[in-house]
Image 1 (cartoon, protein in one colour):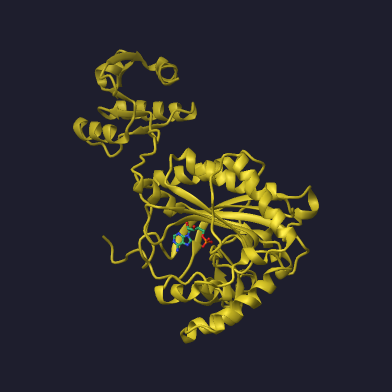
Image 2 (cartoon, helix red, strand yellow):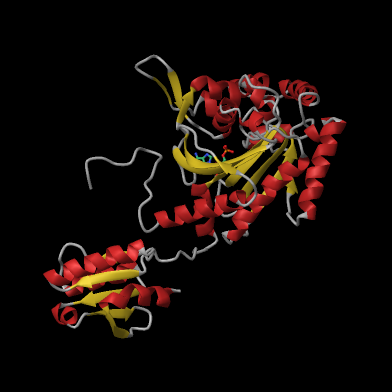
Length: 420
Ligand code: AMP
């Protein structure tokens, strides 16, 4: 223990658990890599205005949860609270939308920061895998992303998640709905804060979980009744494509999500074993965002899946990922001469692509064998003076317990053959 601890609302990933996180990131991104999405990486911080303009001044993320800082040069930066605005900014900056065919399909993985009240499943530093498909208005693209997220969760073995789906309308029909909703909400008995929200972001009031608010929301106008014909047709097609793909979803007209940029399709993946922080992933279409940050019209759609909560969901379902042992061969030298010879063998094994480790620190046989066991290695290689005099090492199969002498020169080939 040092004097210091991980900051409040954060935690460290340490072995062996960290391997699970790597495997989850890999599983969440694998379907994207297989579907034409290219990898993108952006800085951990951006100009504050990118988020206040993109995500929206009135959202909790921007108004309460951003880590902002002023540099010595006077620039106002924010640690990224989400991925979409940064990825779109980067795509525009690199002119990706002009270089090739649309849509530009991108995936990413990284750390995000929100100053939230920490609780299980809600952290101030968390990790997401995300995908954005930029520059096409095509219901098949919305469906593709939902299908790929579903596939990602399923390959991890998750079952107890549900997909919530909604359409938020577009710039034609949403304002009409917004007016009607505002009119309805203004008649209700609500506190100061919520009243302010009616002006800024009335759809968010629908999200208020407090029973005294929910009670009053019965009979509120529903967006579905206000969708224009184009939005309705678009949404129907997304739903049909999902159904055709065998992806089960629930229509949830209350799903508005906490970011201003969404239009039309919005969706969330919720897991039923996670308590209050049940959203494992979410996303939607953001047809206006590019213009909001000074770019051309580029209708787009994307999602972000939370790595931390996906790991919690695996735990909730009692799923143990089958993680291959990271070490195949563990070498245990007995004596100085063996130390040099086996260290060279370990290097040779590694260069041949075999995962190998070595008993460092010159401990005795007992301690070294303990390390070998803990490493999960399939084989140990032990050698002492007498072995070396005969030009052999002892190769022990840790699964069967069998041990055989193998000529030093034949070791790498022998191990490779046994592992194949
Ligand atoms: P959002 O951008 O809020 O839709 O977040 C997308 C996903 O990121 C969520 O579904 C969560 O899985 C994850 N996430 C968002 N905020 C947090 C947080 N504070 N702690 C852990 N995971 C989070």
